[in-house]
Each structure stands twice: as C-alpha cells, then as structure tokens.
Length: 220
Image 1 (cartoon, rainbow, N blue to C red):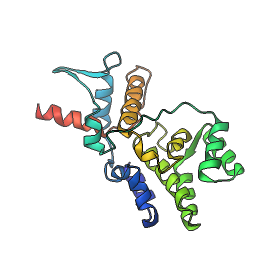
Image 2 (image 1 turned 45 degrees about the vertical axis):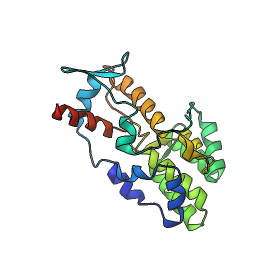
Image 3 (image 1 turned 60 degrees about the horizontal axis):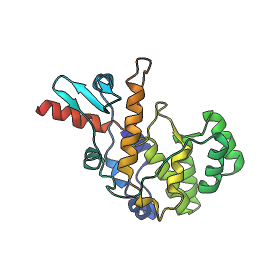
Image 4 (image 1 turned 180 degrees about the vertical axis):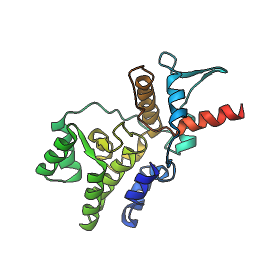
C-alpha cells in the first residue's frame, strides 16, 4: 500500500484543499509497506461470521467503529453512503460523466479489466492528464478513487478498483459529509466473512486494524 502511495504521490497543491475537504487526506500516511501474511491468516481463520468477532484463546475480540477513526483518522459522523453493485455499462457511464474520459476509453478500460473496474495505473494516467489540462475537480476525483482503491477498498487483485466507489465523489462539496468509517468497517466485515471460508485464499480490504488487535494481544 505504501508503494502505491508513492507511485501516485501527494496531491498537487492545486487540489490539496479539495482532497482535505473530503476528510480522506489521512489515508496518505496510514498505509503499510507490507503485511504479515501469517498474522492476517491467523486472524481470518478465527473470524466468526455470526458474532462478527475473532474467537481467540483469551475470548472474543472485534474491530469496532471506535477503532477505525483512531487508526485511520476518518470522519466520525455523517451520512452512510451505500454502494450497490454496478454492471459494465453503468461503470462506463460513471467514468464518462465524472472523469470526462471518452466513451472509447471507458469501453477499452472496462474490457481490459473484464468488469466494472479500472486499473490503478490507468487512474494515475487520467489524474496526470487532468492536472496537465488544469481540470482540477476532475483530477481530484481520479486521485480520490485511486486513494481509496488501495486503502479502504483494496480488493484481491491489488491492481484494480471498482468504479462504483467513484459515485461517492460525484459532488465534491458533499462527499466530505459521508461517514467513511462506517463504510470501511462494513467493507472489512464482508471481506472477513469470505476470507474465513475454507475455500478462500486471499483477504481484501484495509487490514491496518488487524495490527491494532495484535498490539492489544501483546499488551495483554
């Protein structure tokens, strides 16, 4: 995650204020260089879906809503923004409408990803193109989608991000009012529910919260 931050770089000064207004600037400094696979696997194996908690020798432990803002410094209050699954056509419409890319570009990118996704490398190119054209609000949307794509909503591919999250940045004046911590926790729970299954091989989502549990266990 840290390497992806470095690839994108900090936001250009022209959009720093717009990024800060969303309350997501803290994600630039809350990423890890690498994770401990053994540690993550151990926690995932002990996750119990019915209680949304880890079953450990000392008892039950869970990642709560209080843990997310303390570790990621996300907005604590605000409206809950839901993300319904979208198909390729809807993804293309969002890309054309919110990032102002051409229909041909949107078609090609979604075909490359074989779904309603875009590559993080492609997003970086879009961001730089919009900055060069001095289209600052469009550049901000591309930057933010890339930022949440490898932090809050990282998926198992590690290279793609679902276009559905772009919808949250439709109106930059309002997206700062969303409760990011709640969405992050729900996303993490859903991925843990899947990762705890025997057939699962990978864990998606932001896992910096696991290290908080690990530190607590050490202190215990």
